[in-house]
Image 1 (cartoon, one colour):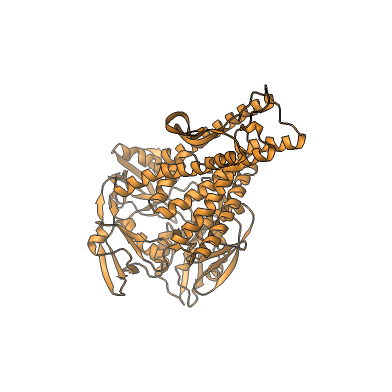
Image 2 (cartoon, one colour):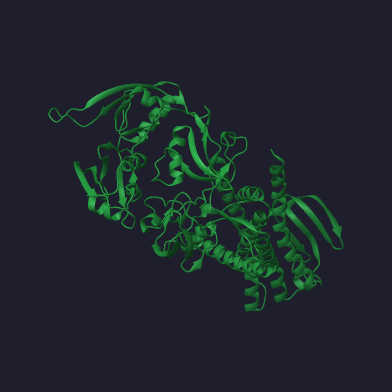
Length: 618
């Protein structure tokens, strides 16, 4: 563990403790202001670890770091006599209302103080620049271009990428208007989010965008650093890669194959140089033979993309199964892109598809000015249900043994195969025992006369995956959110506080009363600790930004009308104000038990979610 990691670890309990302290300080100050005696001010629950007494109050740190409490004299009166002066019971309804809302008020004040300071110091953030939209997802279908900046959603200005994700989730299932700007213009797109079952929120399918300047991240003492790449170098070209593809896609090909990568870069002074990075390899991965599923089913066609016209001329439609482009076999998106790169604008393009069991040849003229590879971006390809066709990875045991892309697996070690999932399961079972994978497969089309197909038998022994390590990558689009003056920082921090209060409340309502946000998004002390560590490692402004958001979440949650929580007490005070007398001791007592059960159940649930999220999935 490095010194920075150790400091981040120490900052986690201090940061969480600060938010709890601020909340309890609100109760403490409200009680003292109203004239009530505070007996205990505790960070944590359970047995006291250490503490000190100042005046009438015992200040302590307790063993269970899951919150804190302030105990005021007479907070739970026995009702057998008049309330003594200085006890909570002696306070009138407005005073008790202030006491129970004091923690929430201080949490909001904390955000109103911290966020402007963070904005003034400078907050590292991810730009709302998007990468290539996920094929088949709403942003892709709407035609939102890769590399564009999301300016606004439903008229609300988008500040950073996390704001974009939250705005979509809070919007839910309703259509939304997105304004996206490119280097040439800004356009409005109507996008309808879809529910992500795994994450339990609505999404539109946009990943982080890369740094527009294509600056590189380079790890110290890595193969890239030793080859001569430096942090901040601008990537101009991947030598030998198809230039019609985005830079990130140009890198994927050779890096996936574990090949040496030659790049043309430009340093900060504008000097260009060519660097070749030879990766180091370690056999740390599981055994594999080097086959993958084919993805040739056209799930959907984008009618808003740059190649929509030529796709319409070709007549490609959903349900088609791609077979070849100009005679070159297609097994997935990468092979489709490679085949299209051999075509040129102004030439005829021939695509072979299988449609309703019949092979058809589709032809169209590629318009001048259209890079043929853009056609691939307007097609959403998926694996065919029940397909047993395979794609063979170059340079792997499967290729050396004689398997070819497009072969259809009949059986593995005598066991009949009917889907890719069965093929994968069978191969993994054999390779895990370092055994030989015996594959019987069909190859090519049936003979026109006999209608029989060529059968091949191949024996393959899996090898540990040689994981290549290059030590460099394209950087994500980031910027520093910094106000020009303290006055601007206060205004920006106030706006951010208002937005976070609104977002948290809207998310909570959707979680409680609709199915638009799943409760699996709730997090407990493990999630808070993990995120605190991550933000602390990015610097104090990032940590305090998270603590401000955590403080707002704590404020909103405490306002819920659940007995034991501040919101439950406030609800009883409203009842008392309306009926002129407190609720009965019996009702109050039972409600506290119910509230305790609810809170404990919630803690168990969020802890379970934390274990699933951070431990079982790692």
